[in-house]
Image (tube, rainbow, N blue to C red; front, side, top):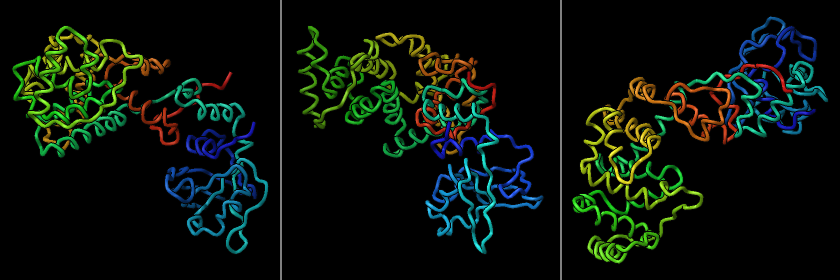
Length: 398
């Protein structure tokens, strides 16, 4: 079998999936790999800041990888100043010798004879099946939970910061929008955010004592009243028509997703839950600040329509934890250790993504949140080369 993509070779090189004993260049010089370098995601050589020894002489510089040595010429590297610092040419096959300045042969390592065939086949399969976690069938996965959680928190917190800036540091408005966004549960999160941005928290506060008015306001503004066919339909429509004119609400279409949604996840149901939260907890800031995750969960358990136990845990993880941590530090410095402890005290999530990690048994929400970050931002994007997981061979294909 032949390697068809250079990224396959890059992965093999980066993870050291080749026999490193008694290495030699194609010129017969002894070769030792001290540091394979750092993957270069910009233009230029594949790996930078590498350290090797050739005939016991230390060399520092870049590594370039190709399927065939002749690719050096076909890619015109000989004319590109960015490649003058290449100290080693790593190829699958050497089909011609490459000479650089002063007619010196470019030190070359051939991988074909030092990489097992099974590894070649498995790596090829890895890139073709990364979203299905094919890697776990081939390797022991050593997960860097801490840094994945840091990445996940940073993304969530940057999102909260952006909302806070847009809302002129109004915390209640920001929590209101962040709450609604997360009640969209990924499928409709952008639609929910669009809805509440069109109905400010100031308008909500003016109608906070009447849950029917709030329901009419949201359903009408979300173009969902036609899907809410009850005996109360005409009354809700009348309330909304009055409020739309009173508050000069913008008139536009929100794109909702209904396909394959179970009734509890429908936009109408989530809006009814949002209304009950706002009606029962008019100070959203106090909703987050008063008590711990257990108290927040207890408050959510009294919302009508009822949240499932799993959904309440999801709300704690995705709403309470990031908002609590962010507000505690006034948006300046995050206490990641404290946030991590909040997650470690919560049960592991159980959903279709977590169940894909068949060879792992997460102990808590800290680990499942890390796995979600890993899957959504590395696996489905086939970013195996920048994946923070350490791959250890556990056996070959078969």
